[in-house]
Length: 249
Ligand code: PEP
Image (cartoon, rainbow, N blue to C red):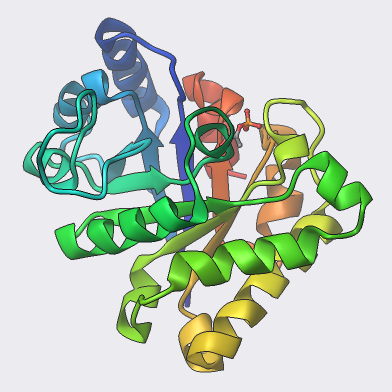
């Protein structure tokens, strides 16, 4: 059975001091829930401190990006071995904000996914359509193409290590959540796309999150859908009580 995986995405928020404060507050209210995994993806600067703060709690720590090379002349970048060295568990790859503002492409997403797997980091690969694409009815073509491109050259044995996050761009940070039906429909389509490549048995092992304005009040409806295995949570992961409310939906 797939576990539900709830991961916070802090984006460019929280200094080290603020991250430590969050971790200390969160540890006071957090209790592990059976068959649920929890992690927080924080800015690079806070990762090492957060790892120490969450030690023994079962809460994982993730980065929000990485480079696909191990080292070299890539000023300003961080590599998978660097993240691994400080104990980072997960890495978000291809978030729509990185695709939109920082030139992330399906090709770089694929390279980063393969590097993360090689390094032993748990990749969280983001896909999702824009409002224009949904209104034009092209969302399935677009997301299907993103998933296939991400999986290019990835072997079936690695599928159970990957989390695919379906994040419709029109629902990110807008307060406008996809309905449970819309989210389930696309997550089922993503699993079918994976099944077409790897077979149904392997596709059943793929963890698929929904992301886009998830909050305590809508978490249960979304997270009880059969193909939604968790949530990638932006704004509501910044406050310990709200994040816990989602984990404990
Ligand atoms: C995100 O950025 O991954 C996200 C889902 O943001 P929010 O929850 O704020 O919509």
